[in-house]
Length: 88
Image 1 (cartoon, rainbow, N blue to C red):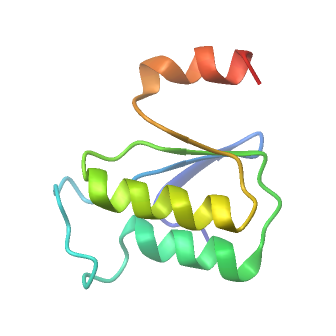
Image 2: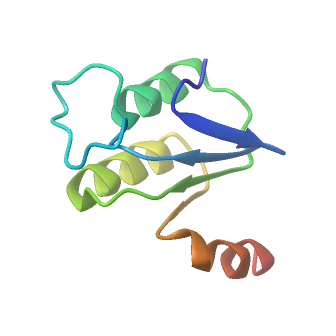
């Protein structure tokens, strides 16, 4: 049910823009915002969510939406992921 994410030990990596496209409009079905809404609606147990999108506006919305639903969210590039997870 996470068509555009990678699930590994309850860490979800989520991008807004998919299929090699950049700045996908939110009106396009199947973008990372759809997955965000699915997570909020269905409330799966996820330890951390990492948002790594070049679309800053969409990434900020996804982060705020997931934090409002009480998920721990990291929002930046992968090279900082290890450091952030080690500090949790």
